[in-house]
Amino acid sequence: MHKDERNKKFVSLTEILTEDKAFANLRKTILQNDVISEFYNIFPHLKRTVKPLNVYKDTLYLEVENSVLRNELFLQKELISKKINKHFNKNIIKHIKFKSF
Image: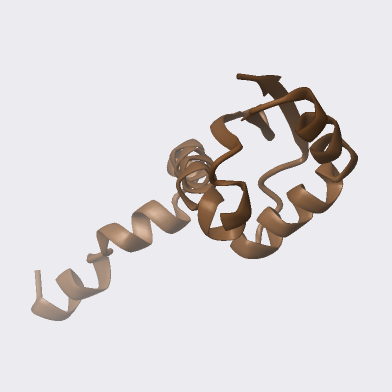
């Protein structure tokens, strides 16, 4: 085998992880975890009152300090999901569910 033939078959790990269909679920899980870890960067004003719990089946679960704030966020949940999706340039979050502390 010639050296040129070996270079043509070489594929980087990054390329495999970002493009291979076998890793689609892994990419989705990583993005969902990124939503949790980036939440306070997107919404710094919610740091004291809201805790992002997890993302499951395109739904973000948030734990909220009190019912008044939960109701206010419920009314703005579409705006919240749009802001998150815009931050990541992907449609990651379709729904948001709230839970009290």
